[in-house]
Length: 120
Image (cartoon, rainbow, N blue to C red):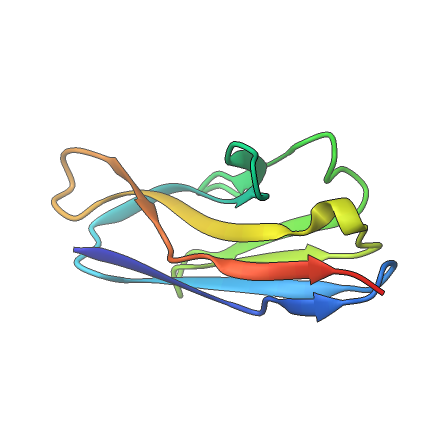
């Protein structure tokens, strides 16, 4: 019903930058919050940043000052600009959307994930 497709992952050196993008498609009546989560090997999935439909962002402490989340409601897209990347940012990054196909019940939807590797 709602599909999320991420792009923009890859290999980058410490201190470098990457931009992740995600587009939501399918039967979408409304999208509430959108965001990015990540999961490193052996660790639980954690929030990186989220943004409300009104553009209010929320960041994990680890992302503050380095990452910027943005959203285009008209295009159903969310992006994450990541600067000053560190090896500990290495993880699979997942796009998330709280959306409703029917306009009644909201559910969490997830992308397939994109690998970000920070290494020299």
